[in-house]
Length: 122
Image 1 (cartoon, one colour):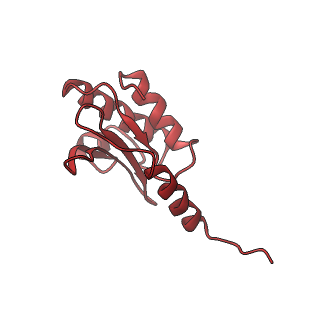
Image 2: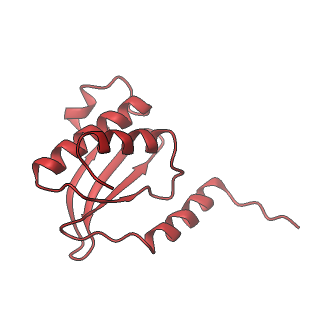
């Protein structure tokens, strides 16, 4: 008998597996990405002190004014660029990437490539 699991449940399982291995520190924070139906969110988190160091999304006014749609690869690229620029400006170059249980393709891949291009190392 084959038991089918929902896409959401597969994503949750993947995220749990990833989070056992990924941990952020002050010198090397965790760059977490979350996708909703309309927006993409990114946070830099120090897991030792449980503090969010940086938070941006496609809903942020500075990014929203520069993109046409909040749910495209171009918006993910713009978000990756902005996150990388702010992180480097605040003195963070190395991060640990947490893709949030999503597969590493499409918008997540575009976000990661753009962040790397603008100075983040992971």
